[in-house]
Image (cartoon, rainbow, N blue to C red; front, side, top):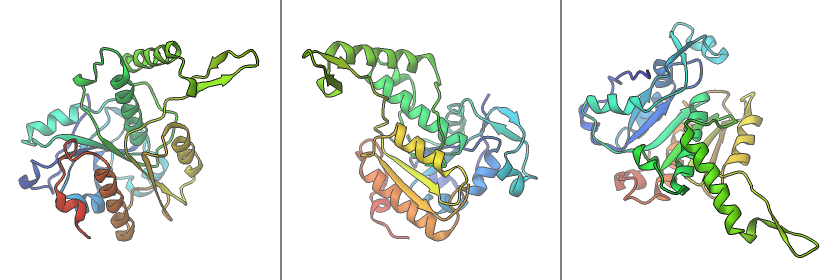
Length: 269
């Protein structure tokens, strides 16, 4: 079962705020990710509550984790995360869950969850209402491929392709010499607002960029690059830039969907 560790630095005045579910990287843990996100969390604290989920499976520390946080074990790897919301509810939190934030393997799970949500929303007799609905995501060093999280998304993808085939959408067809058309089924692109954070010194930068170009509609994806390596933003300038990107992201989503305070959209750091 996924565990959730209470963030003691947040006071009870923030229990009503919209929440962002945060998923740490693979072979890491909540304690480390909270430390990695401490600057961003401080900057967002007036407007969002960060809710941290911890992966259920024990693991050895990742190489970047081992070099800095070797004494912060035990280390874990991902599969499930929704239990964190229920346990956060038990602390008295009442704000709607509106977004996702993930690092490394956690970002991969976030993107996979968003894709599953999009597929379910498109499916006939959609069951997406049974799950939390996320309106945006912030991905640190996300790397593919995306993964199937439940049989529901597989069924939804099959239904989407069947519907597209029956409709013969001419925008997805190639003209043949005999006047007929052959349907070309393309990869489903994610069309939910995202901020992708890439480090130019990250040895896996090419893989992060590959995921961005293969899975995300460029109209909905914002990219933030810094001179950092494989880590969450800590430099005050990078954090301030990221917060501004999150503001633009939230402004692109209906305030009815993300009831963030207007002073967040217009505030300056």
